[in-house]
Amino acid sequence: MPVYIHIIGDSETDIWGLSGRERLQRMLKAFAGTRLVDNPARIPAPASALLLRGDYLFDAIVLDALLKAKTDLMLVSDEDKPVAVRISGENVHQVLAEFAGEGQNLSSLRRYELGELGLPNLRQNLKKRDAPYVLPISRNSRCNLESELFKRSYKGVTDFVTKWLWPAPAFHAVHFCIRMGLRPNHITLLSLLFAVLAGVAFWYGFYGSGLVMGWFMTFLDTVDGKLARVTVTSSRFGDVLDHGLDIIHPPLWYIAWGVGLSADYSLSSHLPLLFALILIGYIGGRLCEGAFQFWVASFDIFIWRPLDSFNRLITARRNPNLVLLTFGWLAGRPDIGLLSVVIWHLLSTGFLLVRVAMGWVSRRSCGPLHSWFEEIVGGQDEGKLAVRIFAPLKSRK
Image (cartoon, rainbow, N blue to C red; front, side, top):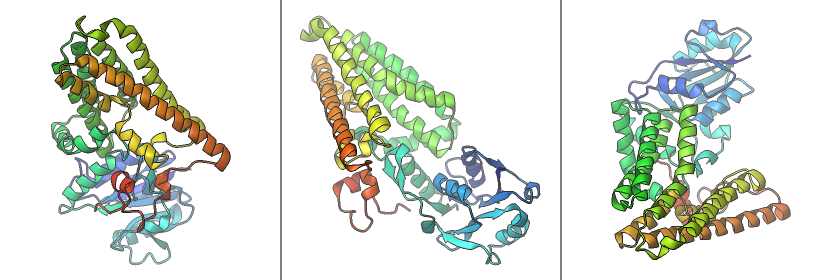
């Protein structure tokens, strides 16, 4: 039998274009075995129910814990106000009346603060560590909440361009998209267009214009993901298009760059070899990452040890490689730019191969691997450089 969910009230303001009720409705679609009801009278007596306040911002991991709870409970905010109740259906109507009245009479339910739920901080999909949250929505807190959600939508471990250059402009770009009614798929399709145009420009040797379009494409690639996360908007088509584009276009750009080199450059006669090395380095790197996650550990290789997280900042992915190509063009030597990409790809893949081998040996000798994020101790590790960069413990509220 499904868990019946009823949302009580709504927020007085929108966060990233969504009211608290709308955001909860979108988030709850991702959970199987649930049924959202507007009228609590439709909840059958033997069923389990979850009551949520619509004027609070809930972390998805908190919703998941509440839905999986085996006992009746009441979750209270930091201000000691009831924000959610997990209850059996036969008591839901009495509880609903008390819940709407700030819950003074809900003494029969065990009260939990968020920290007592024992929820994990590690977010493997975003390669980061973030504390779960339940935050009140108000006009006064709107700006802070939008900033908080945006920061949480960012991957903790990524390349240095995405981590330090794009966040500020991407924040304003996401606001613009919401005001204009643009959806993530619109931005992804636009990034696809610029990826193709950049490749064509590289092919014909128009490196300057190609780099402008290429960098704009990488920016849009950041914007569409952040827009999707802060608005809880996703589609199968968009996911396939976004991830497929991310995987396919980088080596095609490098090959197009090589084709655009005129016969005046010394590398022109060695292009077939360079193209082969590009594919070896690119595909080899991806295979190393996949092999680690599927056969060695249950998490991404770049969050195994701090060394791996630092490596992700500069490893041979699109943005660091685009920096090398840009410097080559600015120096008037696009051939050297391409050669540096080839060399960096091979070095990066070699390093990943060594790390996969080390992980395999460590697993066989010491047991299952654990991410260094799981080993961070609050009140003790704040001063460590890796923690400050990839997993800051200071609250951003």
